[in-house]
Length: 391
Image (cartoon, rainbow, N blue to C red; front, side):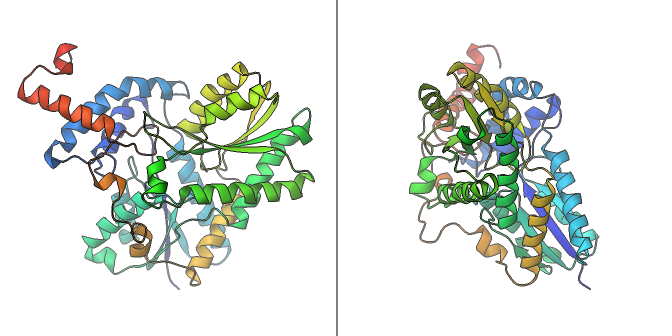
């Protein structure tokens, strides 16, 4: 019988306050996050940005207890998925591969090889594909595979996205229904989907399917929710976590909160549609920042749907995805990692004015400014860091 390895891919996050700086450094060291025209400056610039950004990020993580719960939850999901698959007679072992923090992808690959796994199913914990989330993780795995002959010998199957899988859709609808039932006027409660944003240029120039998948997913969830509660609740979809002046997918979450408040919405059921685990953007951005903003605009009852975490129906849905992949519903790593067909220019492949999709990720406009400032520091010793006494 084949020994199956399930590789769960996620972003990662700092588990302690002292991890915040190193985590940001790893993030900004990635040339897919900030691509410099001079490669040797990548790491110095990453150090600089992480040093400047750390204090603000540390404050955010302190507000949720001192660190991200993402690794703990992802490892719980891995254990639950492993158990579900073994109950189905599949000799599966789950592994966690984080993109920017422990356990890194390299570590997971080493464990897979050491455990004598015969075939691997790669499952990103991003329901909706984006070239900057799932795509980045697939490309990292592809780079490792090209340089590792032993890893190349393993059979590898990839699941690219699963936003429309019935288990995921049903699990989301059930959790929303639970929160609606707690509202004073359940039939009038407004279902408010908030997805992580990406720069508009990703969709319009790079052909990223993310927006299309998000919108289709929200529709599927609302259809399933209507079957559960017997009512079609009003709903909205917005995008959160934008950074900087670049135009991101709209409408923005803060704008829709203001609009709903002005229209007289009093009960809001907030759905973190693009997140399957609790982390900084659910616990801090939604629960603290957006809750306060909603209250400011007159929304009295702000109920946030919890992330899926280890919700049993969700885990069974992941098991269904793995089982279908093993039965032949698969794509290769090369196919999963490639950029959209016909794409001539990936936004991060050029030196441009733009932003990446994470609330912690800087690119383009700030990178250009920082690059110029960094050169002033090195060449003339009269840049901003000298001026404010940091160097």
